[in-house]
Length: 166
Image (cartoon, rainbow, N blue to C red; front, side, top):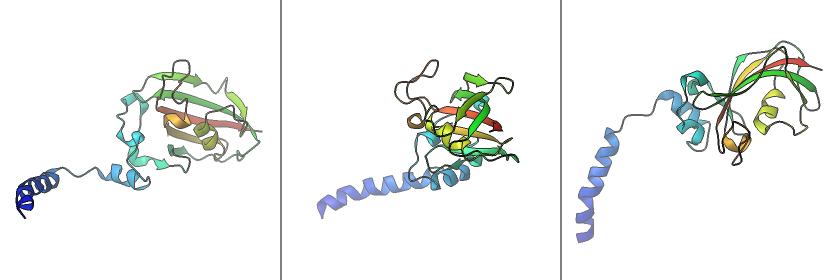
């Protein structure tokens, strides 16, 4: 009983302190509800140039966040299809690290494992003319090794446009 009397003031103070904490923004709660935990993508501060608005994002089953900027109306991409995409890749702080322009798009076959997992998964669900923004955790990007201007364990922010499906 003596131990409980000593702990009561501490427990009471902690409970009151927790009540005084401001509530999390609704946008953060809605994104967090889609995830089992409040992961690194939600705890990251994004630079203005990255144009990330977590309230508009949806969690993909693979674990990255995305938002549809424009639905495409052309041919559907899918496994085995050859596609041409233009894109811009930024780090979370907004620094641009890669780009492919519409005049010189990146061409690849969906599912051939030449692209990072999040990029491939997003494009395979798009239609020609579609545009999406992705926020990619390191494990679905370049991971602990990084690559070129992408440092190890970097979160990537991508804007992808599906230019053509063959």
